[in-house]
Image 1 (cartoon, rainbow, N blue to C red):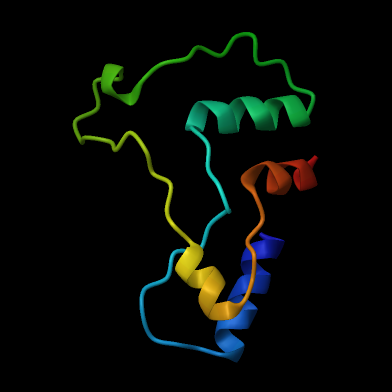
Image 2 (cartoon, rainbow, N blue to C red):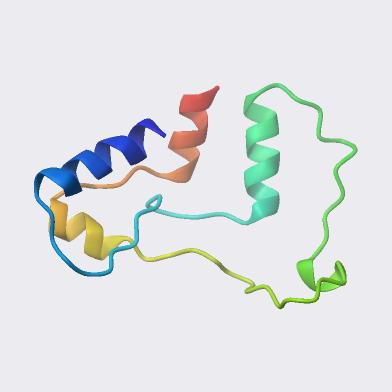
Length: 92
């Protein structure tokens, strides 16, 4: 949240109309996110089961990849966004 707040302060200080994606420099699957966070927090994830959203019987379709390209944001505000691994490590 600190990173998001910092980036929003930059936008508010120098606003520009348009559509910009704000996210980590890279991405990971929801599975990898959950397992990485559990590992960093010292939690046991041995009971977790891997699966696909297509196997969950959900009524709305889900995209296989939800990463966004934040390079336009980086270029406009002159920043290099952190990696998701780095942000998760900062939580631990």
